[in-house]
Length: 370
Image (cartoon, rainbow, N blue to C red; front, side, top):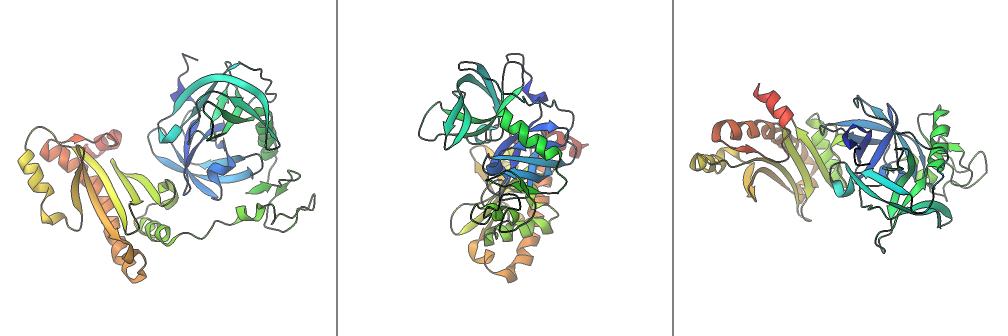
């Protein structure tokens, strides 16, 4: 697949409050991924090539087989839909390629061979491969030489090297075809009989299995958020930012304010950090630049240098997170931080000869300049 232009294919990164994964188009508006990538969330973020994110609604999941369909609510653009093989006939040593976003890196392709086409593991058959699989690859496609999807990446054994697994495409094809007939907005396939459960009930109407004991009911309600999550996402909502689009794992958020990247995380048990990598110092007017950065006019925001990257920072003490009467004022400062970051990267570049930071969205920076 040396001539494979991977940027043109419909493979996207998926973000939730639990982490990130991969998914791929099965038609212009639906993405297939792993259940464990999206669960227990019903709304997730799908990131486009220009780093903008759009909302995806989880429509169908199969926790037992680790599959999920996400319906994208927004324009994805023109991308190639990779055909999903209905048969999945594979042989040992057959070349395969894996597309996905390993450890949060941009879209990547790794190559290997089929180690075993139907490896039995925990009572289910998997495609086993030696192609490199890392966290973040989950939910991405496994392709043969004809660029057909022959498997859906699902996991890597942590105790072994060069051993990866995928859900055979025949299972994925059945799951997708059943989804095509679905009328309900959301459903969970019963782990016992695979019939669709569309509401929280104790027993499956088809086979009588105890859905509560099988964990199916957990997928009909998102867990109660941690107080830190409630604080940050409440502040983002007040700043007119959809928190679902900002989620980047457990108590971790990232998004762009115009051209400026915004990162939010808990650095320790005592602080929530808001940071924006804005620019790199240029070679002129350094005295003026650092006098500007050290000016008290920026309080309560502060600048630092992380390597050669100028960052704007706001730190919130955890005691304020657990003090609801402080939230309105802090939410206003967080909104100002988001707005100020988008203004400052332009100011540093235009007025002090700085260079855009590596994560700056140059397209939006040019739009702002004009």
